[in-house]
Image (tube, rainbow, N blue to C red; front, side, top):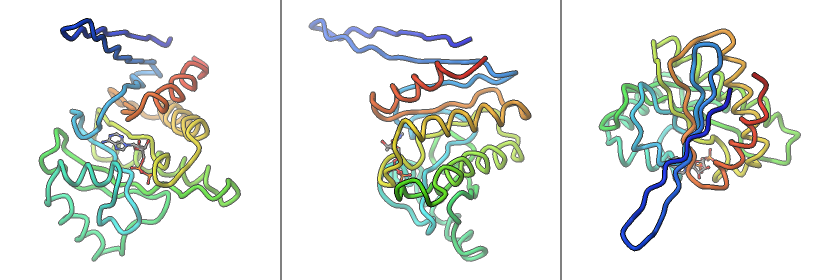
Length: 201
Ligand code: ADP
């Protein structure tokens, strides 16, 4: 069952902010959606929408490295030395520096190229390999951004469906305490909300 929580915050002169938080239970795991900046989250693992260089970039990648500090980048450089970066659809794990997390899982989503370059499968793979890496590292709570929907221009509605269906599918077999999607804009949150509301119980 999907539960929707409305939190009303009132600031001084009648300015009201409405914070939406949605949660659905899949087997033993809460699948939740919220609006926010993922660098402010507390979780065992925070997922980064990285690029294949693992050397940082713009968007959420830049924000995670900035907030987390150089330890994360240093570990990414070590991984690059060992395996030469990260392929699209794959993921690697580092510690989380100053973030309120034990790990950062760096995954590389596909660039949108019109839809006939395996983008759907590669996006699903980015979520699946991240979840698998988290599970193997005994992660209980994991926070995802909306991978590929910024600079990589994946259509948000299509990405939301892949993200939530892939997570829900994974949770049929594996338990976490919580898999959380932290969405940066109202528009992205709305697409994820529409999709989660349509997921079968
Ligand atoms: P990609 O290259 O995979 O598209 P981006 O970082 O450009 O990665 O965008 C992915 C998503 O992350 C977009 O929806 C963007 O709005 C969002 N985003 C950007 N900064 C943050 C942040 N600090 N916390 C959560 N999401 C963010």
